[in-house]
Length: 168
Image (cartoon, rainbow, N blue to C red; front, top):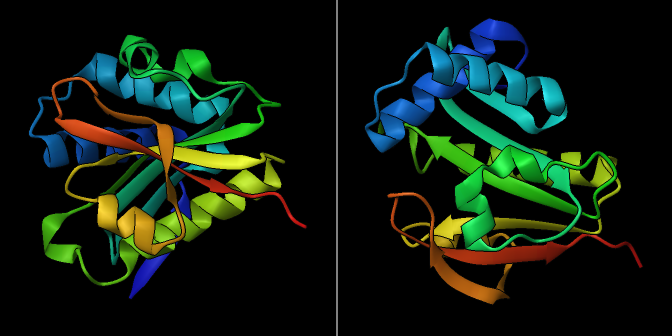
């Protein structure tokens, strides 16, 4: 029913941008499409789509970075923090259209991002959990990080969460 795939090319960049616009109720323009395409080009393994038939119903974005940034740094532009050999993997977004939630799609994307982080050799995966989704992250093995709560853009309050990926 649902198919997970890597986001590749301009069409995938459009799908990621359009999903972001739909979830956050934002207007998306050509500059946004170009930015998403550039971001996919940096680290394609961390840009994922879930489709149901021909419809994109969920997306996720993640990439390695050298350290856990502050909320201020995130607000300056997340891809400035990208680092191929980073010890940390930043899971920026898991976005699922409202009518497709509670069907395991978020868990599918989270597992795929954890796998991408491991393949990239990162020691920890971190993300900012929107106040409405903290329980989902904690249920899936993430812990609250010391960095705590903050704001990202005009999107509300977020909590830093993380999961140690080091194998014993």
